[in-house]
Image 1 (tube, one colour):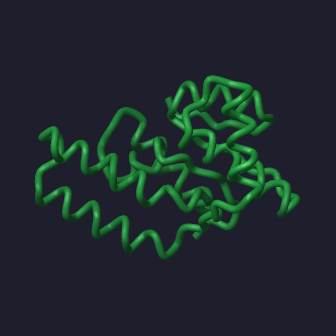
Image 2: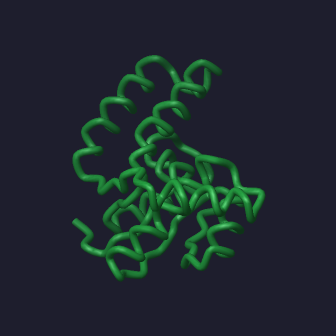
Length: 145
């Protein structure tokens, strides 16, 4: 298992479970890095897969398998809690940029983790707007187009 940490946004994480453009690239990164994300990620991922199931893009059998796999994988994810520092950082980002709420929480989670650990880590995203704000915030962005 990879030892180096990278912060993965849900936009990239979902590519592990649902075939999308750049899924192969996302899976390579997930083998290379240990996954760090926000405590909101499991709920956000289930929401994304549920939307696709309701839209008919994912069969019931595939949906059930994805949810089971995510629950098993969750044991290996490192998740950043939504403490005061993350919430305050997200609010600052929202006031300064056009970032959406969940994206701001992800960016702030990565920033707080870096500050508290003293480690610089890649911020991996497939979301264009989030990419711009993460770069603005000083994160080392890895883009998954």
